[in-house]
Length: 165
Image (tube, rainbow, N blue to C red):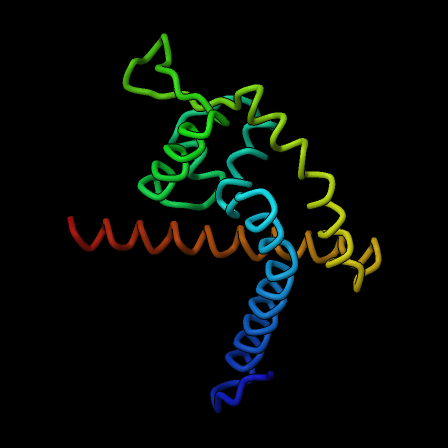
């Protein structure tokens, strides 16, 4: 659905692109996430944790929250549940006891391996409407958009700090 906003061409273009981006994200997630929850009891954030730790190794709580774009408080609950299930472990950093390092346990690695190939195949199927070059271009454009939004967020934060001093 295109926007019916009566603003400028730039505003209509931005709104239309945003609506299409969000609708496609929702559609892809509707294909990917319900089977993970129904078949394996894994939420999207739990998947993100398991995948990040598997590919990047142990990391501090704050770094993991930043990587997953979730709040630290939300991540605490997710990690509590994963730790309860024996899928992750949190240990104090021996160099800085204020920092807790989260790592994947062997059980967590096995759990990820048990469903990740099917998850990837569902993702390949969901993305099959785009050929390889279109997927590459989509990834490039999303990265560019994300970096622009992050830079603007940084500018907004700097402006807020400047106004408050």
